[in-house]
Length: 205
Image 1 (cartoon, rainbow, N blue to C red):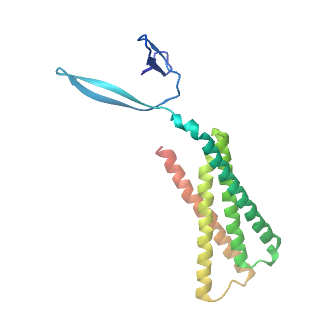
Image 2: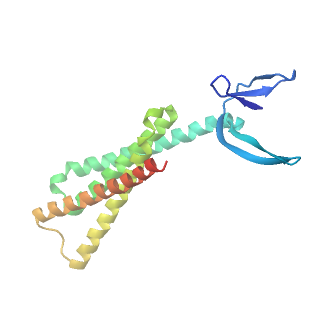
Image 3: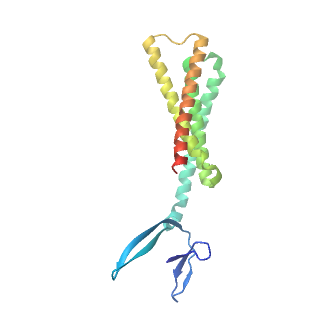
């Protein structure tokens, strides 16, 4: 096997039975190129090794199992999203009668709903192999998962304050200010953290 780049295009060639180099039509990619110094009768020369990556023949056999896993994952997230959507609809219907803790549960459920929807969409995009839309899915999924965990943290922090003070948030104006503060924390801190990691990834890629 050898690589030919004389025509300006990298092609893979194989030595035929007639001892002639002929194109070898098989998908491949260059993993790395490594120079190895060797010594022959006192002279040092460099052997250049090109490491190729070729598709695994067994991969095609597992494609059907792959697609079944993908479809199962999508269906599971869609079903979960439907039940989460019902919970959100119920809480929104009685929104005027919600107390402060009901608003926190509603916010947590909505963030979890968005997370499941985006994960299902990411798997659908992966199945359709649309390269233009793959970039945002991992970032959005990580962000929404982070938001979900932040809402859990906010709920537990608020519960701790309520237990310590033994006084629930009764004032409507105070309740709105506290909820806005918690919302900024739960949605804003993940934006900051994810943006930092995305910037680091872009700089040092």
